Length: 303
Image (tube, rainbow, N blue to C red):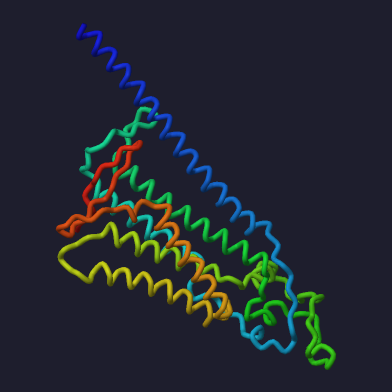
């Protein structure tokens, strides 16, 4: 009787693990599919998108600034905005959960997934999803509005004689750019809102909110807040350089920063599990660890 019961329990356990494995695998594949769809739409805008062709006034001095290279390049933006948070999140979850043995095990295709790997996947996945959504939101506005950048005249060199009296106050819609750089000619119509501003605002503000819940060190009261301040200043510096480099008008960066800020708050408050972190009476943080409907607590990241 005992052997039969053991065999029955073993079969039931294996069936449960198999069901859990299928559920987790389906969940992971669905998450990657969603990220792929949003990412593909962003790529489609970049490769095949055609911005709205807006006209100009010859006496518009806001469009007569010189062309300058970006102080914060795209490579710098993506390495710092994506690489720094992702690396820190992986490190933080590993330190926080490397010895955690609670909860039901997560098995995918016969391989048991450590708690810190699963939590890092969840945290980074939410972060990247929010980043992709804010970027798509920014691109939709860029290509729909088609606002001209401050260096429009230098980049385009339109075939319009602005010295003629009849062109001075006229809104000119039909014109041809004499310049031949197709990439710059496309980019000159994508001023509003600022992509650098929205991207840097989202990544740095969300990263700061993440540290608020995951980084706890009793050795200093101000260290965490100083790091958060540095992150916000990095985003602020990026925003300011877009104006000083004549890449955007001030209203462009204000709109971009607002999109990134709103996206970070929405993702943090309604999508991520960071806000659900409980606080003990002694001031320490407990982070909830959810596995297939079972919620347990895990120690926070302490240095």
